[in-house]
Length: 175
Image (cartoon, rainbow, N blue to C red; front, side, top):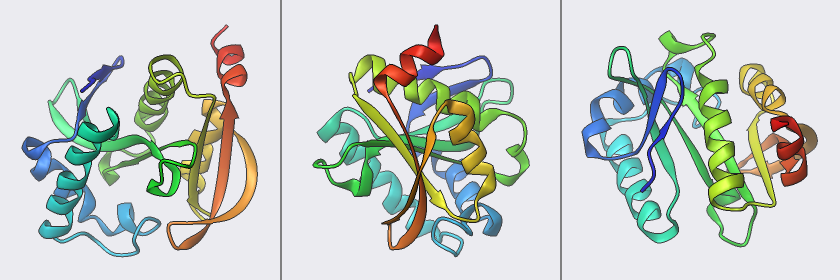
């Protein structure tokens, strides 16, 4: 399992020790409004951690918890996973941050590290991201990462805005 680091974050494969921080984030109505539409219960967060631990074992990638290095607190989470959780689909990246950590550049910082992992370590040919059509903050991070708007598609039981980039786009942005 791979830990990633950025200037201000340590992205650790999600595990039981992250429960308190993840539940704090997932129980915030504003964080979950575009994901499930309702705050998580403790059981929801624990079930997520269990699913993620299994995926790390099965695929060698999944969700990371974002640990702010200065405070050593969980401030977010993000992933590289198969779109729609189906290995037949391309890889996607995604993220969420607790409300107190919004608009500080953490999502872009983590997204950059996760995209590098997908293209460099996993040798992905493409990477996509989806968000609720009203989630302009997430769409901004996707564009900042170098992704292009692809259209509206049905994923995760909702019509989502889809952004994507190919390996060549990623490499060109790194030059």
